[in-house]
Image 1 (tube, rainbow, N blue to C red):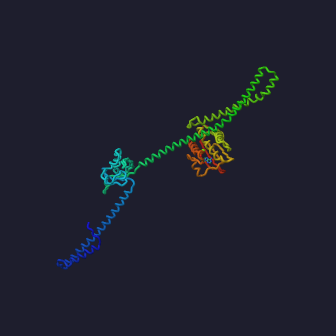
Image 2 (cartoon, helix red, strand yellow):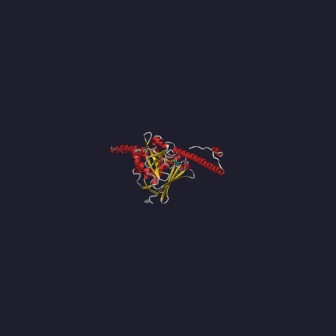
Image 3 (cartoon, rainbow, N blue to C red):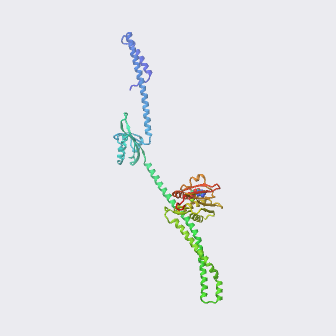
Length: 459
Ligand SMILES: Nc1ncnc2c1ncn2[C@@H]1O[C@H](COP(=O)(O)OP(=O)(O)O)[C@@H](O)[C@H]1O
Ligand SMILES: [Mg+2]
């Protein structure tokens, strides 16, 4: 295009015409001169118009170029891949993200087909995506592309129809985001989750073993006492037996009355005879005690945890307190105040676990005190049985209170707490449609409240 630059040039041109034409090669009369002046004016006007149009055109051209640069730079900076292709899949435009994915330059890609870059197995899916817009909506799906590194990269694709200036469908625009890394991250997360679950199960097992250990320690203490006095009684009885045998041998050998009387005194036969009955009674009592402990243990551990029986809460409380105190070797004063006839439908071992966990925590809370007190109170509230376990320890801060039922929350030193006790307790109580809550007592210390549905058979 010839360039007419500015108005100065145009002005000079108009002057030139007037200068050249007026003296003229022809002799001009007045009317033809004015005609010429008209023509020159017209030309001048047309010329100005032309210049105006050209300036407009240049401005529009500059705007267009700017818009194009803007769109190109937007497309270039989109990190998702972008492909615009015809209905036949022939690529018309791609963005740098796509070029770097496939490792080719633009000239090599334009004119090829999108199917050339998708793995064979995904061709059908690519065709389905390309049909987008026919139904008037965006289609989504995953496509595996062959990458520059001869690997496969999975991209989450979205495909929309491409329209021409007359709103006729002329192809499709696909955008895609690599999800291989996302998938990998998801898989890693899933794996980590599984491992965490396993670790959690292991910890629960460990907690079970630990509470079993505590139980066994308590039972060992508990058995020690009756067994030791059964032993002592039997040794005494054996001693008595020897004296009695010596004495009877003398009687059977026909010894004289004086000798027999002397032996009876020396061998303390009368005292022995008086002592045998209480000794035997004590021994039987000891054996009964051992048998009771064993029976309690059997109730705790030999039925499936899903099984439910009518459980006497009072008995569980007494049993748990005894075992917990012995196992903890606690100096705290533990008192029980329970109404008789409180029954719940549950597995005795699990109720025992609930009570022992609460007592354990309470004993720990008062361990540093010389006047540590733990009080258990059980009563009926109609449809529910209420158990309160309170202590005069430090209580629980507001911040901790919201977390104590979460698994693994513990404020105890490593090795002393697993943070599972209250969580297991909570789970068991929930299983039995009960509730557990905690508050700080006005006089200091914590109070746990457990509500369990009263056994209908025993109400
Ligand atoms: N009676 C209580 N007094 C004060 N804090 C308590 C009491 N019972 C529980 N807690 C708090 O709740 C936390 C969680 O208890 P728990 O789930 O039994 O786990 P662990 O006893 O292993 O720490 C304890 O570490 C403690 O901070
Ligand atoms: Mg605990």
